[in-house]
Image 1 (cartoon, helix red, strand yellow):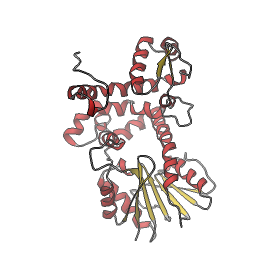
Image 2 (tube, helix red, strand yellow):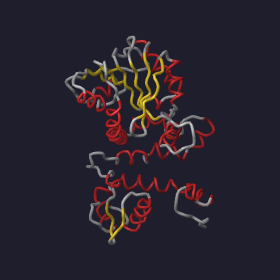
Image 3 (cartoon, helix red, strand yellow):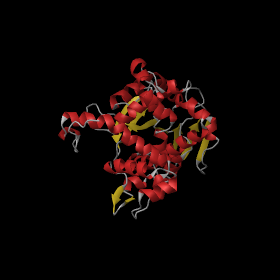
Length: 338
């Protein structure tokens, strides 16, 4: 394959042909990341350089293929080569299963059958606007996971792992003044809520999610578990409602329905915090833009700007309270029941 003046550097410093060439090949870097995560390669790498032959023998891989994949990942700061062997960088260490902030399950999950398969069917999304995941499985991503319980467990582990960094940012930014009871809507196994309750001993918490999720949720002495669907009645009453990484899974129409149901039970003065990205209005670099295409292609949801969240709140009967930016890329989109 001809090399059209490939040059290292930032996109704005590359020749245009090199920029296009590199971007066209980026999915190979991502695919290598998926593969080494799935094979648990990082668990067999240490801080002392080891040969690809040694690592490959431990994971059942071809040494030459593994070396070449690691070489591409190293160009992106994942693993490093020195003294004839491979060792960890801070980023590749996150692919270890035993790392306290492990991203192994997340990297492997993005490369599973329904996520990677949706990329192959992405033309369906381009022409119809519908999730390509429905071409992979008639039930979409959730139907796929219902039939592949091992991958469903991996998805749960990926979401739990991702929450570790998110929790720290949320706790650093969330204003709990005047709040006595917080309800985590679609709060999963309760990891977010438990950390909030631990940080604020005066609080009581309500964990709300689907019955099968609640049945496997963690316990906390100040946490009440409520099973239900946010598309139906039965949502709890609280001073503060928290939704973390939920609305981006849903279309505008579905999001408004969720928020409307919540508004019907919210007492006057209740506060709603939607913890999501704030998609920039301009062309600047931001992780939400890649995740938006995942939402479009796999789930059928979308990332949103602060203005778009404000429009959802207004349509559902909430008063927009603005955006509070965390120290990281996440934001708190605030609304009130007036």
